[in-house]
Figure 1 (cartoon, helix red, strand yellow):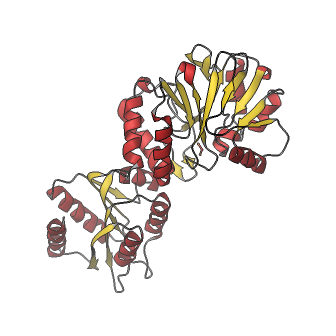
Figure 2 (cartoon, protein in one colour; figure 1 turned 60 degrees about the vertical axis):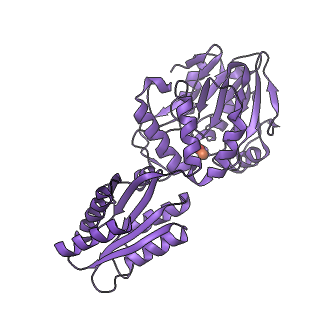
Figure 3 (cartoon, helix red, strand yellow; figure 1 turned 90 degrees about the vertical axis):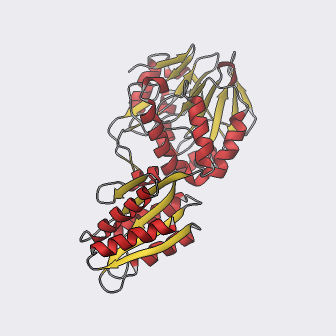
Length: 386
Ligand code: FEO
């Protein structure tokens, strides 16, 4: 397998995981890549590795440029296994390689893997001379783990930010301008919503840290390399990391006998009647990671469940758990649902929204079957509140 040249002496040598569809619970319908980069200089340097099982592909791409035994440094920007679990196999093929990482990264590597290897610790602002090139390191803790850092190659104006700016998008193309822009941004947004969203403050700090850098390419550890569309992704990260929302509603629900679904349709109609764009999503059809992608920029979030055994449907419980972990803030919520006799579900959902410190619209519930009058009254009530 072949490396892909980014600039003279700089290559993408990562792997393409065409078949992955579940990345720790995230539906990766376009697959994923685990990107690694090779810098050829007096000191040959590999930036990140890949997921265990893909070491053959990674080493094969490296071999298309240079004998892996020539590698002097392996930079570990992040220990999560999608980027480091191939490291033991790669180290076996690179006998003189020294691992360059920060203190948290070093601790994490030794907690994940057995064996011995040489390590040089770096911290924010440290540099590493490779010959004609110099690498600069900036720690970006919690984007996405405590160990994360970014590596900057000033002479070639290339930033290697690991997880930041990634997308789960398997493609034979390597550069942003080679794929449809809308698809690229959709995947970047889905990735942000499902991976990075809880760490907005840390992303803001990272954006500040890299804000003054002259950047021609952003080479993330997942997906396409940013070149032409760097302004677009930086602007999007600025917006997403500050939880900036737009006039948009997500109406998401599950239903037992169709009444909560009728309510979802009616609530969607009410938003549309007020000129607010709506995305209506059934948890029977849509994955929670796709719901999160829609929630990313939505001001209004309506969540519906019928009452089941004095509670909510497990699919809705799963969604609430997922939303809680990802912590979208500053939203306006509406809990709704049908019921037979006890009717707790809209209240449970509304309580959840209050715990999230969202504003809430008065909850809506309908007993047994919804008449046309019930639905019309619901629509008028929502319109009056919006
Ligand atoms: Fe792509 Fe946090 O690992």
